[in-house]
Length: 102
Image (cartoon, rainbow, N blue to C red; front, top):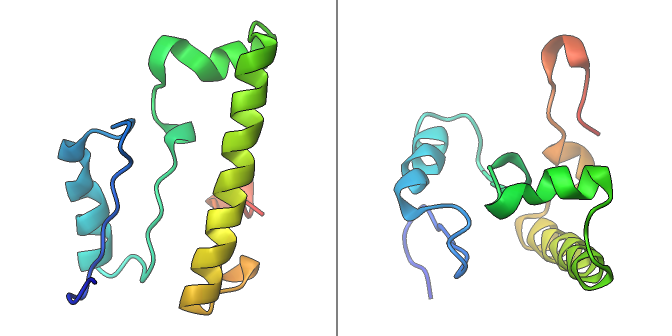
């Protein structure tokens, strides 16, 4: 059981290299947020997977895997929101001239 002020979870597949965890720590330590969540969708992915999603070159099995992963992410975010007492609007990001993320 975690007993400190900051809990960091690193995916076993190392999509985000452990060396990048300092970025998340720095964001929390500097007060940019109370809950910082990274997503692999903003990092370069192996074999440019996101480009393959966009151009339709994924196999049926890969499409299924992406769908399952996104459903698991949504489920986990629901669990985390419940644990931390957050609502969807609490997680919204204001992107300046681009408007809000959600």
